Length: 354
Ligand code: CP3
Image 1 (cartoon, rainbow, N blue to C red):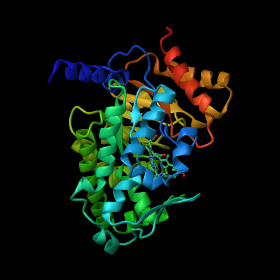
Image 2 (cartoon, rainbow, N blue to C red; image 1 turned 60 degrees about the vertical axis):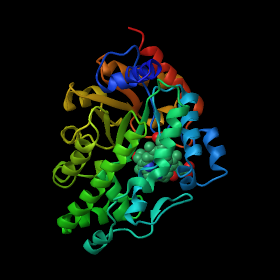
Image 3 (cartoon, rainbow, N blue to C red; image 1 turned 90 degrees about the vertical axis):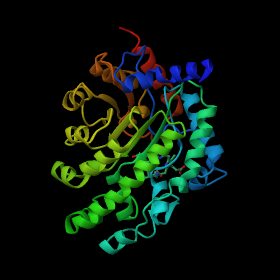
Image 4 (cartoon, rainbow, N blue to C red; image 1 turned 180 degrees about the horizontal axis):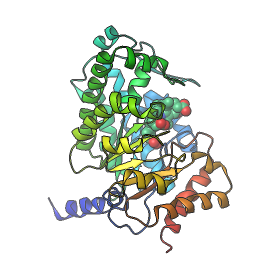
């Protein structure tokens, strides 16, 4: 390595976000926001006016542009690659569409053991080459010391889309398959997990400094069901990612699952706003980092309220190394941009006061 490359690698490795993932001390609390590139941002809406969502995901130069623009505009401490957790289901043989107003739709959902049999093993992760190209382009365009987060859906959340065929309230089809045919369920979860390991490791190879698993809908499960039907799979994915690269393990509605999520693994456990951050951290253990946990709707309040809420979260973190500030879930589409920018500044400013 030349001296210049060593210097850049060092700056990335020692960036506040990466240091916090490893629970090392930081000059200020690093912050990034789930869905930081999205419809609340006029620059994003302008791009979306000329191409649909899947086309944007599959056009590396544009996905890179959207990723970099969001990170720079907000002044956050990490970028997250613009993509979607559902991209990986296409090479499994599922027909994915994002319909206007309805969110994702899978036209051939998996409901039976025979459907599980028809799922394709993702042998060639090159089917998602556009994501890897976007990561490489983004890495080149980003400030050299700004980490880039790769991501994937966690096995349960992906399975819920695959089985329901879209968003769901009660996960009736998903849980029916789980309860009625646990053999087919575990076969499907294993197939998903094998694909995820390849996918995450390829993102790491292309330049992601950390990876996040989104288990957005795992909060619909009882702790016993999580342990039996989900934990072994999530654990295998986390254990299968390249050592030395932090894994952020995120879910929502997880107040009763935090210890089990910790058991499944991850260097950083994501926490939503329905739990106090101090309690959540105590429960998962102070020997792991945490991320969170502002209510995304706090961004609709006036800035005094926003500041008070952000301050409360920083106080709960209590200056302990290993806190990454984030929302408890993604930024909502109508969120005022100026409040998002103000929040990032507030976190930086308040975490330097002592
Ligand atoms: O965080 C980021 O800025 C990176 C990009 C990102 C998107 N989706 C872009 C996106 C990430 C990390 C995701 C993850 C994702 N996708 C999750 C997990 C996170 C979460 O919110 O729980 C889930 C469940 C999905 C599946 C998905 N994709 C849904 C349910 C929807 C529809 C949501 C809606 O409000 O319409 C999407 C579409 C999607 N993914 C959008 C964006 C910016 C909106 C698409 C648009 O431009 O219309």
